[in-house]
Image 1 (cartoon, rainbow, N blue to C red):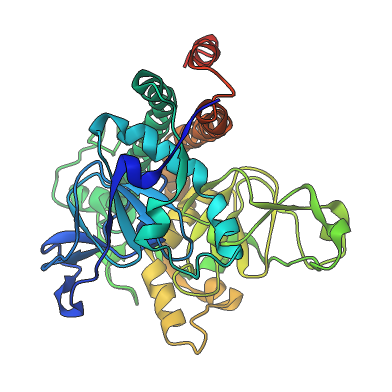
Image 2: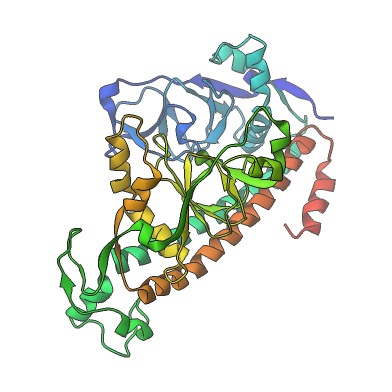
Length: 430
């Protein structure tokens, strides 16, 4: 079994401090500023706010630990940054222990709920709470490094997949913007930069005759001749809302049917849900089972309103979602990226509403620019190859994360020795 130590024995703990509010900005001036877990991802936080007069500075490689609910969440600074009162810096006394300590603290995350429930921590973790936190600690530095290497290899592959997925998504969005926002194919024809039989980047020769060579006025500004301004409803075969089975009925929950909530929509593929329902739950509620390829859009509550997802499994969703089944002649990816590109206009409706929500009818009536179906379908076919690669990467990362999460406690507690774990990974070509 692994030994144990107090966190204060192996790391310096620096509590966050919030700088004056007037020093915050979103212009990129100063250092990225992280107040709490709102900006956390799996490993590294995403900058949204910057600070020109930081009070507490974390360095690359420092562990960031949340000290306000939810206490115990872990991220790692990948750049110099400022932190507020919701975070603390955990700086290993031996730099080579950093990655191991990151995983040891991740394993502790679920325990904070118990600690809070015991009454010893009242909504905030103090420096003393962190210093006294007991973490597993193999005595041999080489064993700690080996454990960190095994788990880190899995993490690094997950991170690589995430970046590749982001690149593929950026390529799809760039193609949509070129065709349907900037009208680059039309402008290229107007300016004589695209000739029949010629291929340009993102413009294969066989699409030449599909695009017109003239722009005309419309209620949404200039659009290509022959295109129209239409409602989202015109692109859909069905638009429906979800539902929630009664929580008081255990027979309705824990079945084989995925059931999504708006918080799970992240503008990408939906492979697995946090909760599931039974056939009884489906038939006894306003839930509907939608097929693969259905687009979900969040209707309620900032900041999720307008967020999207595409079902990769037959599934249901709660009443805060609308489901859009695209007409096949347009393709679901054309509809998806149309909604993504025009989301800001939809969100403006929510901003003006009392509850900052949108309705199914608002989604149906949302005005968008619609090309002839042949062009929309050509985009769908081009984007689908990128999308399928994304789905493959996300699926692989889910498998790797499950393996990492299964190995994490066993390695750190010494239930699996390093030699056994290395053989386990080698047999799986990892």
